[in-house]
Image 1 (cartoon, one colour):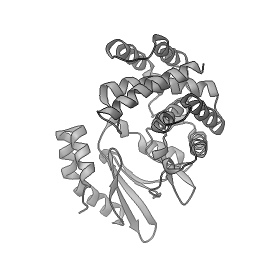
Image 2 (tube, rainbow, N blue to C red):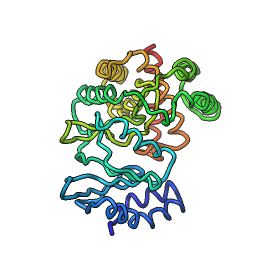
Image 3 (tube, helix red, strand yellow):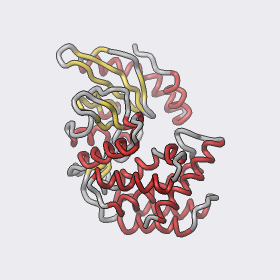
Image 4 (cartoon, rainbow, N blue to C red):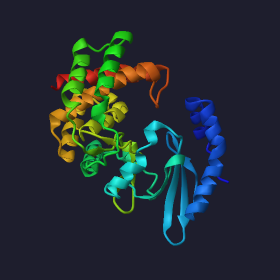
Length: 310
């Protein structure tokens, strides 16, 4: 039986409580049964992401792969659908799937992520080009971002009223306007939904491949905001943060072949969302303390920078 990394077990129980503990108790058996069914053997150190266990595996006839088993959660339902639609175009290939167990057998990539690139322009260019490649016609069963617009507007207005923040009313109003004006008419295009540098891995078949998609349908420019948020710590340390933010928008829009104004507006919406989310829930890199305070205040500033760019 495989061992469960202690950090993954702690994080799962802290996030999911008793259901998480029960799932962890069953996880070694689930992995063993899947490996037996698909004819693979463990082949390296077990790792993990935020919600999924990653087991390197190998079969003599087909070579290396990874088995990913995620905690059952609505946000993970359409990951295999996205991989199936892409068929290896800019993302790891899906070999097998077990939807009731939230399990997939996937093409193996390397541990190195795009986040490790020191050149900021190169990093954003790679992400933008992948965004363009992943923008394919979406299967009909995937969730439409256009159906979330009412919820987004309601949450933005609620958070602005309930939470202490430093964003001017015009900044929140700009995010609401994006939801109203760009939200309903989004194309039937598959978008990753969580395209940031840590979800882009070095690979052999292609230089870079995407992992961990949400499998949404909507505007490809939506994913620019996810990338920009993930660059927050780098942007905070820039000599001129406004200029650095504008540079990310320019490079991403060009590489992804997207309208720069749509990229800016969706990024501004993401920044306002992040400012409120951090105050309610914290961030993965900072749940409390001085770093959380730094990130939430910067999210406010980032939202303002992006509003000024209109």
